[in-house]
Image (cartoon, rainbow, N blue to C red):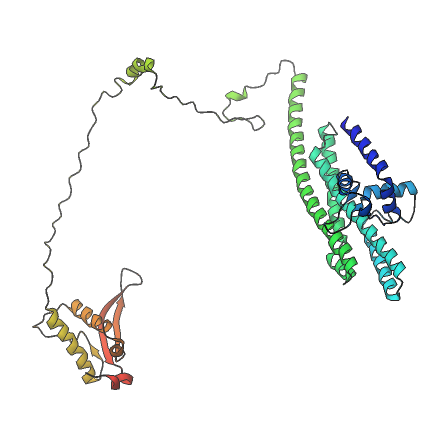
Length: 413
């Protein structure tokens, strides 16, 4: 009922706007004169796919289906499609572009306008043909070949549509982007028809065709999987019919269930007490009473090992004033001698009794705490060895201090 109403609605629109549609076909090159029709009527004709709008800034045009209907009614050979193949369309477009350029070069504006309209019509027909082809592919895919009932016929239909999609995708390679760009050149109208309209439709058709190929492969895989399972079930049924008294094994009791049967993961049943129900108090008490009859064995901690720890040694108390003076004397001695001094060899006398490590730290700390103007007078070099246990760690064995002769003149003791 809905299809009949829709068809009646289309014929009413054709009768109501017949003058505008015929004028656009015969005189306007497929372009609608928007000054003679209101916007609501245009929207209604676009929704019924009698008109289409290429872009927001482009004029409204007749659809390829309506133009093709007029072509068949008039049987005008000039308006019939010259070649249904994409390669034929491309050749016709190239030929029309060359004639258009020649007419422009010779100054024949009427001929140039005629060939430009011919180019526009060819591009429109090719564009509509590509989009219709990809649309028909998806119509069959979305129906999942429901127009045939047999699974074998669905597989054949799937393979046929898949071959059509692959053929369409291969034929799209005949339309080269670089060739269309070179063919259009710098002409605005040619670039609009060839680059904007045609190449945009080719890119859209290619995306839809590639997606259709992937979807068809998935459907074909599912159909063949169903076909394989159907063969197994059919063999199972014929076994029942051919052998009297045949009884299959109870597969549910088997340890290793064949993959042909559906297997469901068992549900682990768990129970919880209803502690909020006072009627269950006696039952719960009987269940939990006497659960633990043996006393818990308390594990005694193992006796700790006794380790003799040496008493802490008192901190080393050194006279910081005497140690600091010894460090100052060490640096003054380096200046007076003008040679490289070893901190180990210049260790203070026994009256100070410093630890060697503390002495080296004091020498290094004094060097780091010097003002920049004093520090540049000395050179410090560490005599160190690698740690035998830890990588990247070095042990300082000695510190050598010398005077930087280049800046010796700036020193004022």
